[in-house]
Picture (cartoon, rainbow, N blue to C red):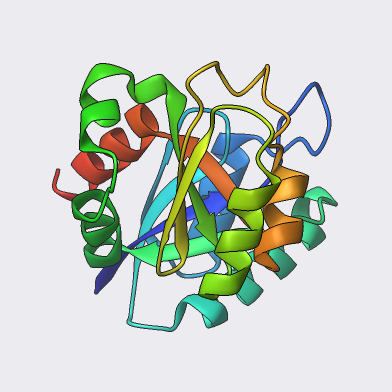
Length: 180
């Protein structure tokens, strides 16, 4: 069995796209995914399954959430090993140590090419800094996400792929859960 982390995009925000975590864990079980666990209410799940591609799991999970909860959203799925590499490849170790709440990792559906990453960097209006590694974009928001013009919509538009962000504190908690 392989351990996976699944991140739902844009759920449980101000009463919209409501997906209860207990219901989501139950749904994962009915899909034959073993040991489903969740972290926080923002759509972070861990589960075990026979090895499958991320795309296969994402498609299955997206369809099941749409059917069960009437929520049309994206899943980003990574294996525990991929999550470990995501933690190790962090290009902002100082920020992770000193201000982890302002460092976000955007897990993306696909890896953006260098030209798209440069386009995103050129579109930044504030002090944010972006680096992309594979299917992840690491973004430092020194003035906070809430005050930034670098929104998820801007990030997705320039990178040409969908994604969802988690702050470094959540990234580390998810990583720890993969080894529990």
